[in-house]
Amino acid sequence: MEIDIKCVRCGKATRYFNLGRIYYEIENPSQRVAVENSIICPKCKEDISRGQCLVKLHYFMMSLLTANMALKIEEEGGEPIPII
Image (cartoon, rainbow, N blue to C red):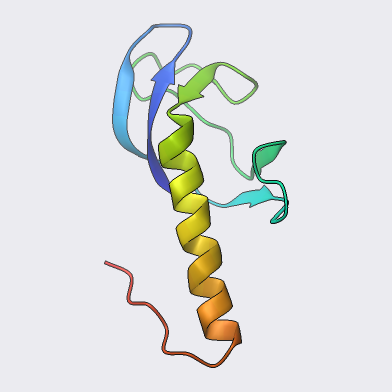
């Protein structure tokens, strides 16, 4: 998943940062999200995985919603949504 992040340590933002695989509860995704790989700030090169980075919640939630909709459509036999 690509999203804009902001490093709490250096205060700099990075656009289109790739978080990689994420895990969350489909019924309640805003409670807890786990990221598979460590998040390294591209600017200061520090590990910001454990609560040291900020994301715009509404963009993040829209990405999760879109991913869930695409999975549901494919499960029900619909045409897969192309990834661009």
